[in-house]
Length: 379
Image (cartoon, rainbow, N blue to C red; front, side):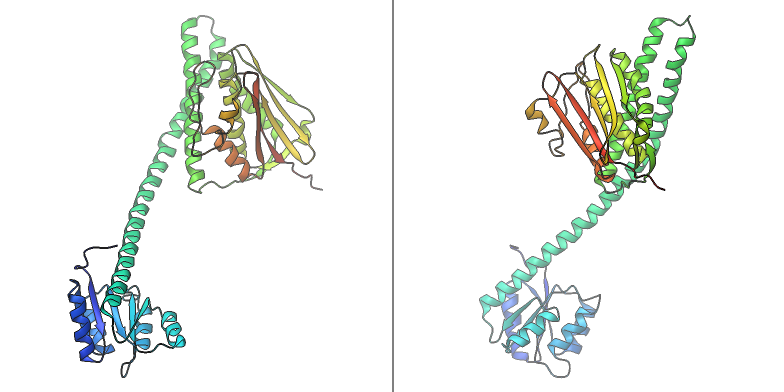
């Protein structure tokens, strides 16, 4: 509750001078600033001269009564947010309902009780202060969001594009090294490591940008027909270079690939496959194998990434999909991660009417995957 009310201005509107004087004395004793008006016309004149925080308004006045003045004020953008307390000897339920329908915030019955009057006035001023605080915080929040969105736009354009170009250049150089026998093996290794690092950085940046967009509600699925087997094969080809650095073999298994057509957002699904493969490589041991299976089961097209790595404890499994926990851990060769990959896969599946799933046993490995509705053949 507010302690200092001296900054607040109150307008008392009543056609009886004795009532105005009584209210003025009561309110000024509480350090409130009081302005007065003997009619609706005088009230408008006073409001035009001095903005106020609260209006105490008598109902029974000649010419324009309190109900009519309240209706006019609530329909005027300049005054509609000023709280109104009606002063009335009318105690009929219909009058009270009418007052609230016109936008009244409270009623005070005549004759006035000083304690009741001050409690009701202070309560309305406390509500007003809270409302103003919320409005100010909303303005500041909008400024913060606007600044954040501009920063996001800069990051998305100024970082993602050159990172993508660097990744592509290193990819090409790495593939070309096999054509030149004279290149120092140490240079080849450095180039391969740089290529792997650029791939990981690109995945991290891409995940961060897409996760941010998803949390801002800015992600929309632009769907088209694709063959999941063919898409997966392309992602595996790129991931194989990273897997090779850990001497991990990726096995692609797809029976009846012509039955794996889906209607989805290609970029979201490609990112999902890439994240599942990246996780599997991270938690697999050197020299092991990872199976990537794409198959149709009933009305779903299923993708499974099966590794034989370290697996996940039961306790950790409970944290994997918790956005608040933001769980992450190190890989078999101390690789770090952002913890966003699986959260992003789960989000993308929802946007494409699919579902993500996983099973894991500590010390034995994990299976992560997703199911998407099969695209029905058109005739």
